[in-house]
Image (cartoon, rainbow over all chains, first blue to last red):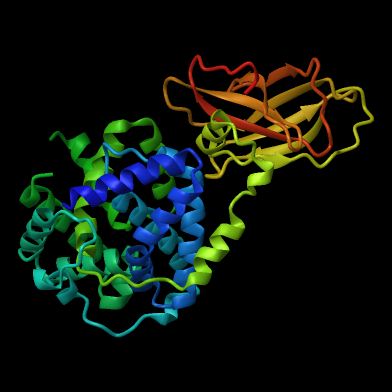
Length: 184
Length: 204
């Protein structure tokens, strides 16, 4: 992981928790391009992603003090806030028809030369990729649709034209495999 | 890993993945606030899954997003600059509600305002007596409260520093005598989460 970047983000989070607006802007400048990309990938509509980003940073301003640096990096914490908000957005139904026809599985197995510097742990990323490669394609595709597209069990079932029960058990088994393979 | 922990870990994974939905998601979020082990499990899965974003190409959002965020931040003018105030204002996670004055002719307590927290988990009804000298704060739903934390009631006269009105019970109604404080129609009442024993009596 890029420790210096993470350390900088942790200091900014702590300053934001104390109401420091300059630190808040710095945090925004540093992290919003990645978070915007996360929201764009899940929502696939620029103006929705912009609204979500706006809402999320207001949440960050008011909840920065609940961030716990011993649990996760600021980027992971921020990404979670964005993903949660996107999931709520998608659940509201207006986004359901906007999905693109794409093959998502390959996205999970993208090689490292595409790696960007987002402060993620390179070794962990490699390990996860390695473990994902051992999943069945149904399992991998279900994980990809859930994580990248924010799809629920039934969304995935609709998408893959498979029973919900199958999707649930693919995801359950995928999680079991990842837990053992990664050693969580 | 026993079955119970395995089940929790599976829930943590599905929560981080985003497939835990509806009531189950809310219940799980609630548990996380009280169970540090569960929060740690979720954080491990989130950290692991977030590496899936490592190849994502950053996209700089348009500048108007930032401008709108700045516009929508709570106005600095209405927030005293004292550090302790900012500390609790942020620590609160509980929305302060401006009192819109409700005429209270009856001598007994009448509902004045309802306080909601931002996560819709806690809710209080604030009652005031007709002479506006006493308040009663009744929880509609018990507020989940971490160990070593307590709830503190504040009165924030417009443009002034907040005044502590003491601690509030998160399960049963608390009566508060306003003593020298006046409930102006434009005052704000707020409840914050504070470390136990940190009752900041008096102004902060």
